Image (cartoon, rainbow, N blue to C red):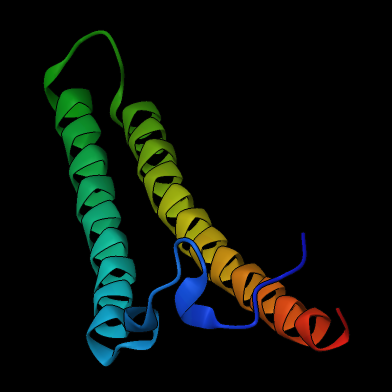
Length: 106
């Protein structure tokens, strides 16, 4: 079974993937995930700082470092997620180009 040359016959193919509204959605998703992680990281750091000030179980420098560590993990996870989305899109574009080239020769 060869590759179908007509793109409208492909399963799962949509011309809306190149729609500017979809690109705007992807850009906003990346931006908002990073903003959300920064806010969450700030709250984690502030929460541990307050816990270090009010609690007798943990002193403040130690609590603050734990909060900064957890907050930076939130930001790192968001950055890795954004990079993997970009990589996934790049790989899907490469596969699409390969299929187009292969369809000429098959």
